[in-house]
Image (cartoon, rainbow over all chains, first blue to last red; front, side, top):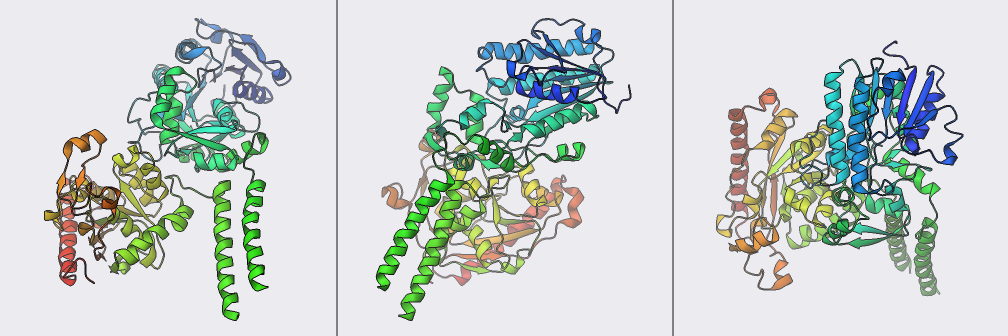
Length: 346
Length: 287
């Protein structure tokens, strides 16, 4: 295989979910790629049937030993997207950790036994940096977290990246790309964060206005696609340049906020429903530097602000404070003044 | 009649401008930089509030504003005092209002500031960030003015009896940062902040309880409650000294001898300017 060219056989994990299904379909559409195999422990939902028409979907539980499956498939590239960010919908925190950590270990073991493998792309997250008041304002790829993240997801991500580092040492001939994604937004993607923004009354942390960053799913898919068909070794932050604060995001989406004191939210993490990852993010915020990504990939994702606006446009239901309503209220004030002015004149 | 018309036009313009500001805020249509600096909020809310203190309460006079670079990054290094860091905020306003380019001073704050709710948000929105190397490098690389107070809590939390005596500069990390980024250092002396809350004592157990670096006791605080938080109306003077070019030592940022030498030079310059200003101001509460 030409090292800089497209791989002939690509294996995508996590194919029953949004990112996995879409990237598998995009790669399958590339004429240079002969075969795309999608793995997942669950069957893809019915509405992905058309999308995954060109993909060989197999039900495989990565948390069990997959043996020499990748070698038998003669996989040349593996895209590991079976990483879950929240215990909701994945059967609790224990199952989530099982899938993230044990699943990655088994997959990397299988990768190591695949002599044809040339490229490995792993989904990571900016959660790797944690979030604390002692952190710099902007994280570059080589910033080390000041504190080990308190949240389960952040710790899983650190474990996953640790195993990839080990894999890189053992298989120096494989180009490994680790993509640290910011939270996804887009017109169609469904994520925990988006469910949060979709509530009419949105809880926030009192006295905190975290800086947030998002990556548009279309841009995330483009970066993933380039990582599969081109050589981009290394670890990259993948986020929309720029920043949006939580209050700004909520105002743009016309939500009403419900500020809650931090200790109460901490207590709520024990009851479930909200994770420490989320609390820390919503207290301290997280911003990453995307210069390395732009330089390496020659591609600039749309800005956080633009990406978020695209999300709002498609999720207008539930909006309380629309710009129109605010306008009419402000016009009313202007009207009252105007009336007083004309009375004074007359 | 003509006059009344003009007055009304002026007020209409103000109301219209205020309404459009409220509209932009309520719909989230404004920009915030990577550090969380909200220029619009600073211009429309923070600066007007501080300006009242700056002009009417402290009657601030500024000297040597020409020493602040017209463009490009620089470190503005000053003396710290006054129990709470009001001097840093007044310095920001002095740079913005007196400088022909109306530049913003980006303050470096201790991690303690970012641990507190509300305070942390106001700090970020007004352009401050955590005092750490990556943040300073990034700000200077963007060509921003960065404000540093190397005395830190030793300066703000010192007793009234030690007023206008510069404290130790610690590791002088600001010099290394300036050298690494080839940024000039502009020393600045601030007179007036020492008298706003004369610090008589420090209740250490209470400070530990609150997680604060010190718990101040002044002639009015905590005795008068919230009223004790009103600063005394001292006369303020701010003087910017000549910029110190750091390029000759640019490759010696990790040499402690060079770093401490430059730090001493900055410290002596500020101390000298402080003495000069104090001579010009015979009484802190009279103009």
